Length: 116
Length: 108
Image (tube, rainbow over all chains, first blue to last red; front, side):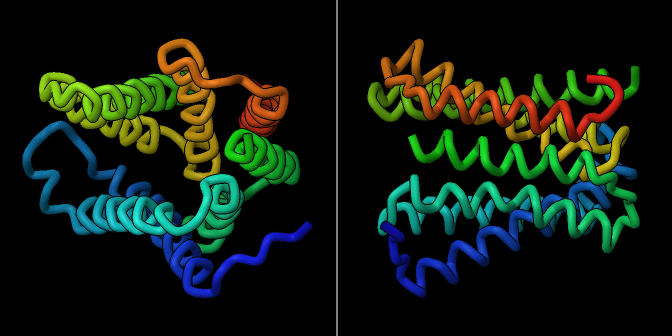
């Protein structure tokens, strides 16, 4: 009953997840200096944040040609877990247990939505 | 109150992003570049709202609310693209909503 996923697809989806998570982190780091002006393009965190997310999305769209959405979606759902870890490690955010449960529910929910 | 504002900002962001995704899908059938332009514009504003939400709140609080985009997309595909709505999908949406309310903590 367990579907075997090809290694290269698994590795790409791992990269997709990591890029997406770090992209999210960088965007958060850039948000402090974010304002509605063109100067915002000088912010390295913003540039890399957007870039990482765009590359992540591109890789994801690419790998979708080779694997079903219902298989890949749970990995996408794990993004929320990675981001929590990154927030705790790099942003020193204190994450209460109830928030972790919420994230678990979201991961399950997103996987279910993608599975159907 | 601040949490509500953040949730509202992200909800607007995901709503616009999901409409944009719908427009992308529609525009690929009609090759109507107007829809495509609108979609890009929507994505742009969705991004701006998301950034303002990030300004106000912690990443571990703001980021999970992005999961609402799956809810919007499911609703839109059902209403506009006549895609099915399975029991599993409803379950998933309920889980997402429950999860987000837990992430939010005190205020929802």
